[in-house]
Image 1 (cartoon, rainbow over the protein chains, first blue to last red):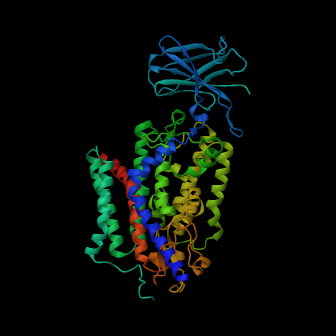
Image 2: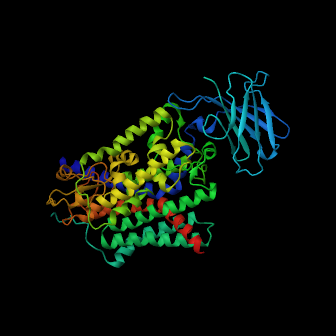
Image 3: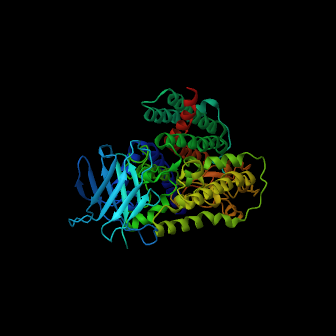
Length: 167
Length: 386
């Protein structure tokens, strides 16, 4: 009986090793593409602290648009403040100086006035002033990109501004 | 010795070694042609040199029946050439080794395998990936998104388990190279409790990543940030982070391997290595000690770069679960007692068959994943001259 079990275990072991070789041979052609597609379709998303909230509304301006994204609330131990992200795009159509009053919450009244210069060289660091017209949103003076929740950056052909929301 | 057992140390004839290398020749050419369909001259030369290099090393493994010393050439080349290719790539894409905040927001932070265990709990609880990369298979900085790396990791892990740390990791080669430089270790007595280091770091980093919703290891402790990319030092915190990266790299990857002749970062610190150890439990390939042949001289224990053999484990004929199947103990054993083994089969019964099956699988994965990295690094150097 013990001999049969040992033989069975041995055959299973070799079968496993053979299967491993088959897996290795199939890895670049079948497994890798299937695994990467499968991972992409797991329904996971990158933390909104990095990616910003989902687009909520778009405001049409002359020659460009402002996408308003949903509020991002940091998780319990994250040190960032809640924020909203506004995307000005396309950056190539923006005037040399932008100063827009933006209605973030869609109640028909402007909530913030956002002002920044748009340098011709995309590598030039950006600075933004945000004047709060609604106490819910924080003002910012001459802010660059020190924190994820309060910044102005150029990403591809858009200029993104993140405005902290009071807790 | 039973009549149907054999040692794994008999050398082969050139003809038989060539015959055994033939499948790897075909595989290497296949992988190379797939990766370099539209290559420039430097990339063609680099690809050809890499293919030749990988085939030659495999041939030598077949000819000499020795694994570790040939694998080490590949592994050190991988460790040294990865930073060359990678740093060149980030400089071309964004002009700096620092990760600018806009690149994180754009989801273009390159994703390596080290944060994989840190992402599991936040993803399980909130479906959120706490890494500023891209989920798309062709996303990220240069088409190497999180999906691509996760897929490579899963495929290689299914095949070699913790062998990842010896046949695929593009960081470990630097310390393996450092550990191989001195003739003798200056520090020989190492407290065995250091073996629990990777598990402690893994536990701490997993919990911290879940609490802070950030890849804590990448933010604070990764020694290899020093030779890949670092946190752009926008403030004092950034400076402290970079200081930690450099200190850990200098200590764990350069100085300690030189003093101990061990892969100290892997053995005492790497949380990914601890995580990968779990997959040794499901891998069919392992290394065993044939108790009937073992004297015990403990040469295997001394040669193990990650201290995966203890007096007790040798008595039991086992390696610890941190064994990364590098083959150092098998090469070091003068009695042929340390052997490659397929789970379920009798120990020391046809160990060379087990070794061959493992090496075909592992080398195929190395060529698929690491071959491209070696070729990229070589091509970067060749670009200077061509």
